[in-house]
Image (cartoon, rainbow, N blue to C red; front, side):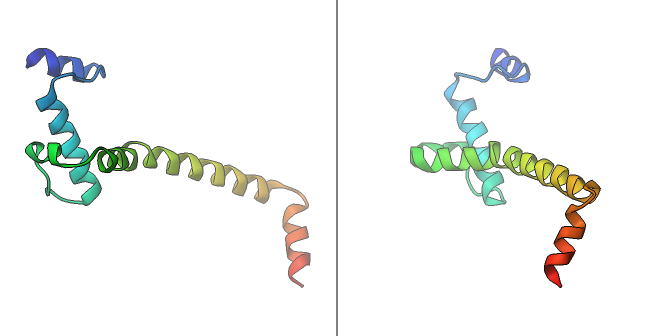
Amino acid sequence: MSDELLALSRGQGTAWTPLQDLLLARKVNTALGGALVGPWDIGSLDEATLEVIAAYVDELPGLAAGREKIESALARWRADHPSYGKHRRSLRH
């Protein structure tokens, strides 16, 4: 077990099923907002559900952060552009 934990600490993942189930249960509980699922419950969840939960927990935050970064850059560009604000104001009148 120590070898598996060491591999996880290095970001290498694990092939040991009990530890995989524990990690998946943590993701499920993160997505659901509480301690609702234990590692022993993972086998009863279908693959599609686990994929959706993993994507929600692992990928959505990065996508949202990327979108926020883009929107921030666009807002700065709009604020600094010499005529963008004037053009927008003239359309409102």
